[in-house]
Length: 266
Image (tube, rainbow, N blue to C red; front, side, top):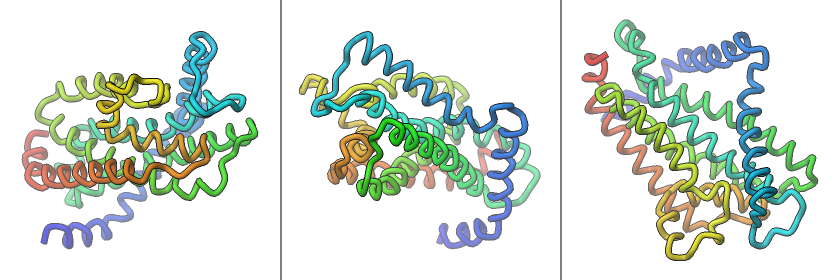
């Protein structure tokens, strides 16, 4: 009963979604000399820093990988997944706060806001994906048929990220400290996800705790596909997918019961 009218209203608001994504895209190009290159440069700069510190300075190694530049490629794969997730969370935190005047003045399906956010984040991530594949190609290690798994991995990161982003964005309207705690949590979350290190290097007694993180299986999936040229672990994808569906369900539940109070609070 709730979804059919919402889907119909979202279809009617498709031009609003398109114009929102287009405005974000154009504004970043016009207001910055480097424009969209920042979307690519920032994650790749992080990869370069971590690769130098962990691989060169600390002599970090990856089990089962002896090829040249293995560690930077490993980092690139993990950063590709993390960038989409963190972009969704960071943008979603203030989604309703930033659009407060719009929510009050115009009658439109409010679910159009997270839809536009998702498309914008996917567009940014697509640009990073192109740059990442270019790096793999330049280093002579472009993945092959295993790339067919990438859309599934991207979709699972998307539903997990947008579900959490929606919940946090709605709660952040009432409790503004949520935003600060979330940004702090993202910093811890980066190191509690096997992005800059292989899970095999972690003592077995701690591995189980890291694997409870639903993003861990997805990051490992990216690394398996892009670096090891293997199919991801299907059980880990199912586990992460279940968490993604639960986060999306929780977001829609909170949205349905709190969106009117959100508008009043704004």
